[in-house]
Length: 217
Image (cartoon, rainbow, N blue to C red; front, side, top):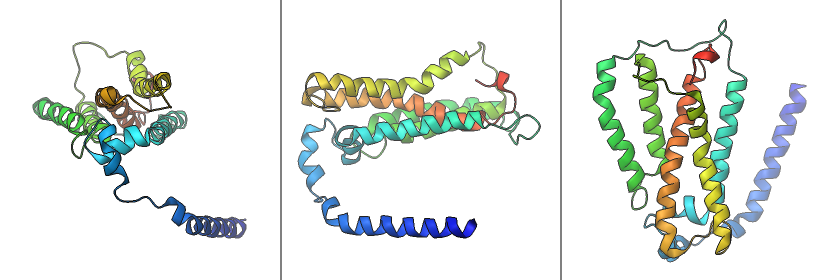
């Protein structure tokens, strides 16, 4: 059976390699293509322009895949008997409280700078997820309980808003085609909500590994 699977994978790899070789001319994009269209994207950074304007649908699918992977992860999460997880107390509370403002400033900076330089929702979300994990490791107790409902809403809201803006763009053109005057603000807003959603999902892979479902977010 393993031999059959190996042969199948080799044949599939060869077929995909041949297809890519044949399509390499069709897939070629002039290096100046993005730069020439940058003025209509709403941002001045080419990566952000591609991710959230020219190829926004691809980014939408990437976030969807991450959400589906997280849901699958929760469904396959280990039981208390077999779980391997980090118990609270591994991170000093005073250190987390001290670092929190710096993390939040970093998250805000990465979110805002994405339109003009390297940064954006994915980088900001990674930093936000790190802060959430630090709080979880420290066992820090807030003065109020964070409802799991709000966490679930946050885990999907960024994706839902992204999809909504794509659908709304149909009013004045094609899917994910923003008006030039509004493009910058739309992209910044999308990245704001995606930062929270991606941060929750990334941190959720850590928190979701805890054995007791009742004590998770």
